[in-house]
Image 1 (cartoon, helix red, strand yellow):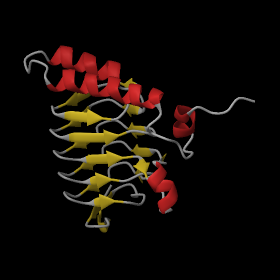
Image 2 (cartoon, helix red, strand yellow):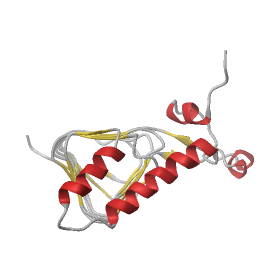
Image 3 (cartoon, one colour):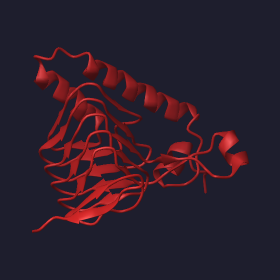
Image 4 (spheres, helix red, strand yellow):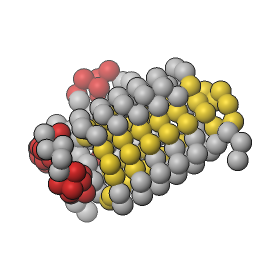
Amino acid sequence: MSELTEKQKMLQGLEYFPSDKSLQQDRANAKRLCQQFNQFDIDDRKGSRKIIKSLFGHCQGAWIEPNFYCDYGYNIATGKNFYANHGLVILDAATVTFGDDVMIAPGVLISTATHPLDVVKRNKGIETAKPIKVGNSVWIGMGAKILEGVSIGDNAVIAAGAVVNKDVEPNTVVAGVPACVIKTIPV
């Protein structure tokens, strides 16, 4: 049996080397597309949407305000009516899946990547990534950070500045560092 590539390891959630040439090329391609998107004529929304559709693995409908950055793009999937305000960063070494009607405020960071606690592995450049899933009708507030492996349930609200490092139940509001439930949303 052949050995897994670094990309296959990354996509399977195993330890991998992000410095691998193939992964570097994938990131460079995504950076070029992000750069094109961020420099697109503001009056040509159709053209900028076309870039996002070619960048993302799956895109049912997205309106993203520039500037936007991601690592790979092909690991990002959006449902219908996805909206992200300025300054969204998605580090998508693993899948990042958004449901329908998701709204993201300015300056949000979503990161699937993490580094080992073991200093020897970390100094070698090893990394792992865990998927992030965002349900339907979620609102992520300004400056929030969503960390690796988190699932956010339908209708949840992430308060501005929250750092989400564990799953968020549906119909809840979370806030703080680390984020915790501050309110239940009546349904």
